[in-house]
Length: 396
Image (cartoon, rainbow, N blue to C red; front, side, top):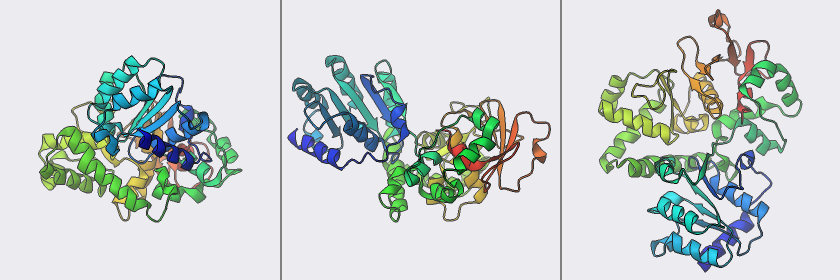
């Protein structure tokens, strides 16, 4: 245990708190039992360590451990935490929980047996966290941490504090909001950089090697996380990767399931299952019509890569229109419901219709559609029903 404590102190000393994501304030840290899930690379470990550094001295009351450490090959999590608790431990953060077999059972027992201990657990495998959630739901409050919003990216780059807005506020006051923001920063100056590498905060570590690291994360999800969760054989991992490649070079599109099945060599039922797994792992983003949600057996109306940064990683020269739609869908869906529409690109909150395009996009197709708006790229400030695309990166 001494080795784990020493490693924690080293991480504590190395953790910077000059750039802290506002997501830290969405968590009610007074809860005894907190789970933080999110895709690999969104900054869960950093956030927990920053919370510890901002609220605790490095002493016997607090501990951070990662369950991918060799210590846990011969020692149990429960015994370690029990020892920590007996010695005055008050708060423990447990990282990479999916790397430890039976983690959910042991954490549940820790919660039940150690009533004065606060516990936070994090996991990078969204699929495994989701599978265990039923066992923990009566005890743990689980938060899902997204990647950086465009607003957060600008804050990281400029240190300028910027507010968030709701979709309704943007629709009603987008001109005034855009003017207020552009008096502080020039959003279009940062927009391309955000799209290319800004969704994952580890870009701050080294921009030159960022996409190499992102490719490694992508392979880990495809070769380890999904196969372990869904019991996919080694031979079928190749088919899963092939499907991801085919789709990423074609998005967004209204999928012809039979055509994709023939091209990929994957049976129709297996392919539908794979698409849902890729969506749940936040590699793809499936867009459904309103009466066919993610749990429907029906096919999605359109398929997108999960975020623009991932799309730049997968496609050498992504289509500009695809990037625009991917950005809008990703940012807006974090706090709103988004569905497909036959008339426009997206329906948001079952009320607002949005068509996404370049700065010369016309309003002709919005005729006779109530609550409809054009979302335009490459404009700093909009007018009337023309709203800047970048502004939808200020929703969280």
